[in-house]
Amino acid sequence: MYVERIGQGQPLVLIHGWAMHGGVFSPLVERLSSTFELHVVDLPGHGHSRDDGRLDLDDCARRIAEMTPSAAWLGWSLGGLVALTGALKHPDSVTSLVMLSATPRFVAGDDWPDGVRPSLFTSFADGLGRDYRGTLEQFLALEAFGSDHLRDELRALKQQLFARGEPDSDVLETGLRLLADTDLRAALPALDGRSLWLGGRRDRLVNWSAMEAAAAICRNAETCRVDGAGHAPFLSHADEVATRIKAFFGVQA
Image: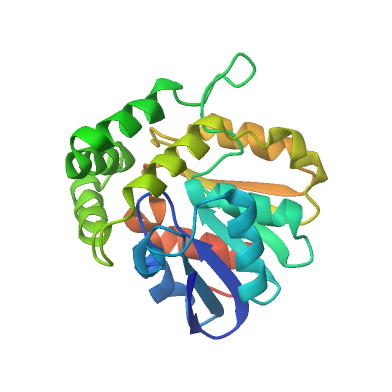
């Protein structure tokens, strides 16, 4: 698994979302690398780790813990499930947690009304076989939808999508199944460290109410809502997100 180390200061691991790679965090890297030692991950099947193994939450969390120092972990979207798994399974390696536009369960259910409809991820999985690139672009459009800076955000996502090569199609299908099937809510009360739940009010993939509900289950959680943002607030509101992350870790902005 490819992990790039950038900057100096407190160690912070960055874990990207579905179909992307660590390069998508470039706005955060630019703003955080002077005060954090960043460990920027490419998950298996993505970016520079395209040919490296399978996408499994437990395996990814274990490998990242082995390859990085004891650190805070930040996970965006699908990366949030990896980061949360790491915090739960490897508490000695994960000192604190930032869930960026991510929840322990992405789909709606009788006791989780603010998730997305279960068919969303299965429809994207079906679409990959018919129109790989078109389906990925539809997903990017959904990520950017609602943002104050929709066009700029969508342009940035499209520029990053294949910047490190095409993600593996089988791994993408696995990732969609993880998003559809994973439910880590029951483990949240056991989360030892501090956590920050940071998301956009206009996010169409992760409802802000779901992030608040998840944070409420944790013992030592903070929340931060970016009012004009969609699913990728670190692209549309990079200064605000970086400032909030620094504040959470006690770093002067």
